[in-house]
Image (cartoon, rainbow, N blue to C red; front, side, top):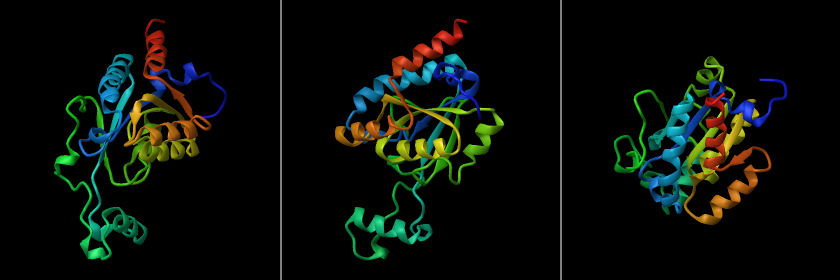
Length: 208
């Protein structure tokens, strides 16, 4: 992963994977801009498949309470408004309605689905090994939430040497301000493009 290449070259389908982050009812289904996501993300997925990109979905499954770190326990207590660790409820356990895919997008048989419980896709999933085995060094990220898993995974990916492209209208959060603030931060260190801009690059590649 060394040497200069243009962004168009980086987005060549042979070296690119589309990361679809947490398109689940309890997350993407609650995003402030979910109507925009429901329009743009399926277009991005279809474009990636048509170009020949790998499509990889994250699926959030909350860790059992007895497996949480002390820091995670304190965070859960704050978020759930409880003062006793024994009162913490597991967040999005396996099989919960919040964990179901949104109605407007779900994995295809040729896609890869990796479950995770942390806000980075590179811990406990084997993603890094998969990507390197496929000679992939560019990630396009879409999904929810921009200011949580998208931002953390993008920064983690950059630290590991990947080119990371965030779809500005293919990502979202629970308020418009947190989404825009995260895009502003990410634009300083990663590539931020609209879905039409990404699709145009992939379409130009398939026409060569």
